[in-house]
Amino acid sequence: MDYLDIAREIAGGHWSALANGYWGTLNSVFLAPLFRLHLSPERELLLAHTSELVILVFSFFTFRLFLDSLLSTARLQSEAEEREKKVLIPEWSIRVLGYCLFLWSSLVLVPVFMIGPDLLVTAFVYLSAAMLLRLRPDSPPLRLIGFGVTLGVGYWAKAIMFPISLVFLATSIFKVRQWRLSLIAIFAFGVTAAPLILALSLPRGRFTFGDSGLLNYSTMVSPGGRDINWQGSPAGSGQPKHPTRQINLNPPVYEFNGPIAGTYPPSYDPSYWNEGRRSVFNLRLQLITFGRHVPPVLELFLASQPGITGAFIFLLLWSLRGFLERLKENWELIAVSLPIIILYMLVHFETRFVGAFVVFIWLSAFMAIRLPSSADSGCIGGLCMIGLAVAMLISIGSNTAKKIVNGFPDSASEDLNVAYLLKLPPHSPIAVIGNGNYSYWAHFANLRIVADIMSPDEEAFWLQSKQARMKLYDAFRTAGAKWIIARPPAFLEHSLDGWQRVGSSGYYFFPLYDSANAPTQAESGAIGM
Image (cartoon, rainbow, N blue to C red; front, side, top):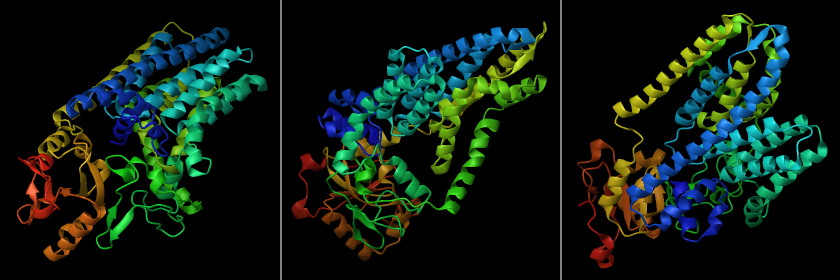
């Protein structure tokens, strides 16, 4: 929702939206033309997903360039090793493995159905890796410039690309071993990234390449707490400079009617509302966080695709000698992958963050295997890889089939339906009970959420007496909201005084205006009809 909101702001000529302190904005730039067409929400969503498919195609070509670069390097190694009577796994089977890994990464690990920058970041990682593999001590300066610019453009897609780029640049220094050439790449990256860094740093009066890392570390590791509607707790988390305004204590009601745009301002730019937040290093909490991420990482590499694990173990046991030494031949890919995976494990790990790096590690591992030089080795190795590919394709296909059988659980159809049933005027100020940052219907209806009771406290709201609720309604009125929209528990649906159901959905609305200040018929629409 926030990426679509940023695109909407850019389409409206508000170019300052590019300098969002939390969300990467390059993907929103690609989406912005959709909002200039003034499409219906369905078509907007359709074209937004179509743009993700275009990014998928772009990602495929960057992956293909990476795979070609990797295999060209492997051919040189194979020629040198023929004298040792050891052969690589056939090149065609490595290509089959590579394309299966790409499908798995793009459709499952970094799912294409998500509207966001992760797939675009993956494409830039593939492209950067392809360029890194092609770097040599005698590389022309233009190649180093392209390498640095690619990393810089990737940083515009998501702030995490800044530390990722530093890892790539450090790896290139050790590979090129020419300081002048290395400085060319660093300079090209700096020039490309500098406009965004300045746009983020100058308004805040401090250097920053993005605050998502700081906020995630502070909330998820130490000292803890939350980043939405942060009020300065827990102790040690800092002093808020301009937090959202708490206008009721129990249950907590928060108001944020300006100055930040977006459907739900607290998540549109958390860096603004969390200005003043700081993180505190705590070794015990850091170790707990890292340990919590070890099982999902092991599951990702060992259990999520058993076909890969089984084929790798079979081939490795067939020819184990010298594996670790040959793994160093693709040290560049290991050098950029492991630090980034560990970085995520220190804060917050999700598979969509590391899709490309999982591909790098598996390809490096398989290409470090050498088969005995015999008539049957190539045939057995190839058949093993075919079996691996079939198993992976069945796994990927079954994942899609499950979504179809389960009725597309990620569909936005209900949110679109609620947006139409509400029929509120664009930009209407509303309040919500529950997760404002998941109120996609509000984005589709072009509404502004100006106050809320957050999800952990919504049960307390519904258990209030009628008189206590009236006081909460007054608090929402002071925030400027004209309606409250919520999804009450099922057992309360028949005892909601003044609440009206939105069509046949599970949502209800409550008008906050009195008869003297009631909106006109044109303003209010036919809510719930």
